Amino acid sequence: MDTLTSIEFFVTTVQAGSFAAGARRLGVTASAVSRRIARLEDELGVQLLARTTRSLRLTEDGAAFLDRGARIVEEYRAATETLKGTRTAPAGALRVDAAVVLGRALLRPKVADFLRRYPQIRLELTLRDQFIDPVAEGIDVAVRLGELRDSTLIARRVGEIRTLVCGSPAYFRRHGRPKRLDDLARHACLGFLQDGRPTPYRFAEGKAPPPAAVEARFHTNDADLLLDGAIAGLGLVYSFDFHVEGALARGDLEAAPIREPSLSYPVHALYPKSRHLLPRARVFVDFLVELFEARRNQTKTTKTTKTTETTRTKRAPREA
Image (cartoon, rainbow, N blue to C red; front, side):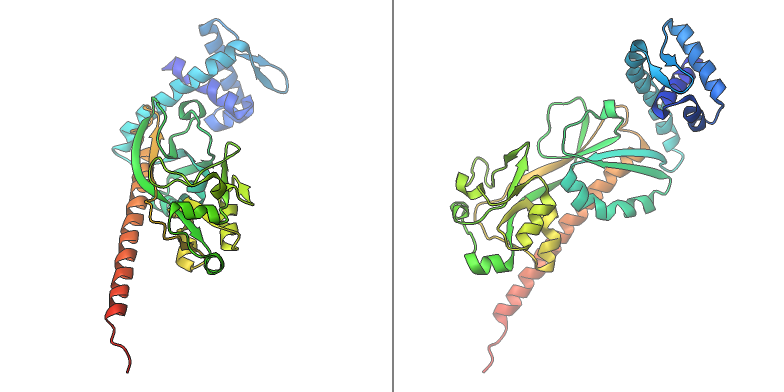
């Protein structure tokens, strides 16, 4: 236990950037931190830090030891927090990483609800589309769209999303509504750039529109800019249902009645084995499941309401 405490002092001090900052985080004096790290260096038989009067710098051995030391500390914290979680409310720092469009359109409106429900959790949410190593970056939960890569991470499927092609009412009045996949070649299609390349408009598995359908006047890797362009009448946007649902509800966009079935994509919560039982991680994943379940129920209710209204309209007596 004494060695583990010394490792924690070393990791915390390096992450904080100085002995003084590390001491403040640990609630001890800077001299106590220095003694602990010196004791760890004696035990390991290597110098971990090159000390100067103004700063500290990792030695080569210190850099090699830091990653493993951080994992040891995290494993211990995870184990103790799991035991405590059976008796106390979820608490502590929760580090979540999510895909950009999912975080902006789906998580952002619900963050406040989650924090109100769990007031002792401190949420650190980062948005990026690059694949990351949650273990190396200290991420508790990563939220990703689409099929998963081979990984040692634990994955829980929390929901599913669909793709839609949408345009503004003004655009449809001017250019008509595409009803088949081939029709897209005659429309202005706004294109999303992924890794510098336009992504195709995909529907039934294995099918894609002609290349001309995505050779648009406007390409960008920002989904919100594409949405703004479609609302402005520049062309059609191919996007996830949760990203366009607000614009659809307001009437700014309408879904194109394309006959080919749209594709669906799974949404997974990924977490390292050392964190999958953390109370704060578990309640966040459960919150994601609730969020997608609520969206499914809302979609069913909306479809039922529209069907009922259509039936009433057809049955309504004609005026004399």
